[in-house]
Length: 247
Image (cartoon, rainbow, N blue to C red):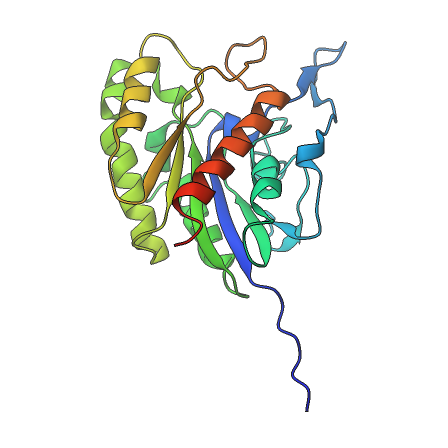
């Protein structure tokens, strides 16, 4: 008797943090001053049958931009780094690439502490997404702009981030879960360097950092352009393939 072909395994990546992970690439204001996504989709961000996303309703579906539309639902989402990342790694990882969007714009790291809604939702999504198979391979984290305005927030950032890493590994039962953070490309100049210093200074096992500084920003000097998001997706993919793909 012939065995049924098992569905391809999923290599799962959690996308989390604030607006630059959720994606504001191509978000413009119309003549009524309402924000909307311009719909411009670079070739690197095109959907592909082997790239799936885990929806807000906890279901796997074909992934397409804006990846975070039903997660960061109070804001207008555009292009983030997720699709460019997935397209860049899919040829090098077995099975399908599963993306689990969790980022919410304007959120400070204290809102991602254990017990807070954002953190608990991320952990819940992390647990639910593997129920029908697949393995969480990495957490991609881009956050910190909201912590660059107050000295106390910037000073506490390193300890808060290290705690978050420890907590998420424990709560997902993945003690060596790889984490790739993005060192800030933008934020309040008062304490921007202090937060970046914290991000670049974390030396926990299986944690690496890509530096966003110098990526092109929109006129608001805060959010990455579509083009910069594609570049960031490729930087994240390079970091994953270099450091973690064989784990």
